[in-house]
Image 1 (cartoon, rainbow, N blue to C red):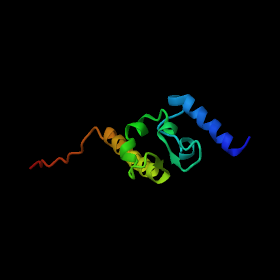
Image 2 (tube, rainbow, N blue to C red):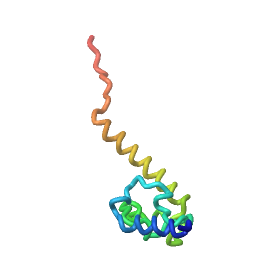
Image 3 (cartoon, rainbow, N blue to C red):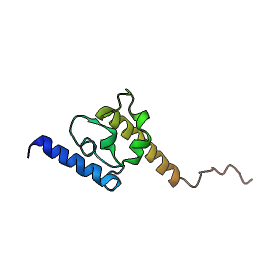
Length: 102
């Protein structure tokens, strides 16, 4: 098998698996199945969050997502996840007792 045919077979397998393989934690190499340095809508397949935010992620509007665009999105997305987790863990507000006994 040639490298191109291997990439094509991998791309076909990813697309066929759809949501089963396409999770929010896919690496760039998993998304860029054909190895061309860009992710097409077809390669993104069942990656629901990527598909839902496609237009915002594709900042240059070329219809594909570059690795740089993907990394910016992932970094921002992970920062938002961390912020939400921190907010969820902070159910009790800290209040100083300012009353004094005299």
